[in-house]
Length: 183
Image (cartoon, rainbow, N blue to C red; front, side, top):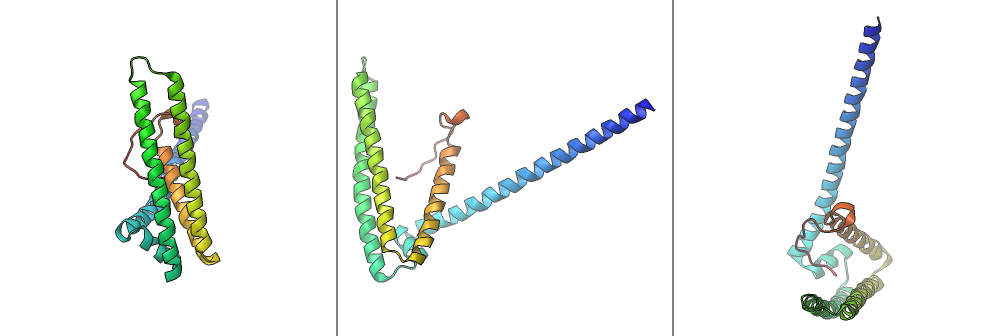
């Protein structure tokens, strides 16, 4: 009788373990499908931007009038000029940093100053991006602002996912670095 009870308990435990494994498997499959759907939506938007150009993408998505589109192109061009200059300066600073690091006796004070300036340039780049988005928002109607908000959220979500996927254990280091261009 005791062996029968032990056997029944083992069968119940085994059934519970199987149910937990099946539940875990379904959860994993479901999460993968959700991620694939989100990724698919983003890549569709990205492909549309690539094939039609950024200006045309925003014109079509926001349904901009001719006047708004003209303002949009001007805002975009000004942003690109400012951003390019900041990125050019960042590249110069990174080069200076590498040159200093590779010296036989690197100057830690100079490296600290370069690091501070790189930080300042990153700050300026983000400020430029904020200003750019605020200018875009200003030319939009309230309905267009809702669509613009959705585009910003998609861009931010995708950027965050890219950043998280590139980090190694405990958020340190990089696994793989696919080519990307962003502010």
